[in-house]
Image (tube, rainbow, N blue to C red; front, side, top):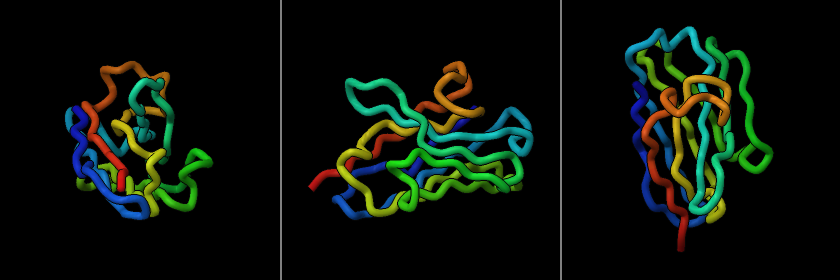
Length: 117
């Protein structure tokens, strides 16, 4: 099970940190991702991190603004989001695996991020 939290409404330029609490599987064995879906659009991969936090990957539009991290002891995935833009508004999902092709039963329920003045 994956449970996201930390979403909310912020002004452009603001920051948020999303968390994803994992249970029911060996979290430290899995590559994890964040995926987002804006209203009326398909899901898009945002960032990924390998099992031992030695490799990190970001979509170009968030690179330098977002930071993915994980705490394997606490079984928690994070996404620190700085310099938020209205285009970042979306439902953000934690995913057990590399991205949008992962079956939905390996996704969390999502947490809403709204960036608006």
